[in-house]
Length: 72
Figure 1 (cartoon, rainbow, N blue to C red):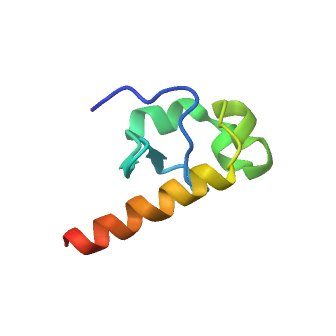
Figure 2: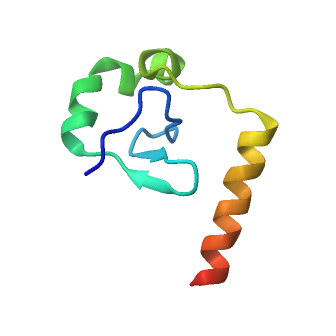
Figure 3: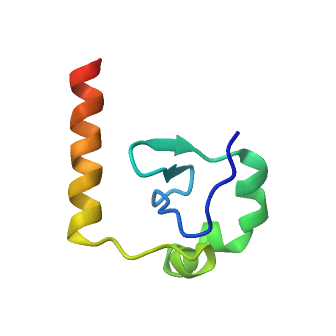
């Protein structure tokens, strides 16, 4: 499994990270290292060094999701 960049956006539940084009599952070993941060959504972004969700990032995520649907 690829190393997850520290600034990679993560899903609210912490089980997936955004690689720039699609959601990737988080290795369960990585999930365990997050400890209490994964249980507290208010601290989750700060603990993971997540980047803010900008309009451009959101648009890219939507475009990638739509592309995945068309390919299926």
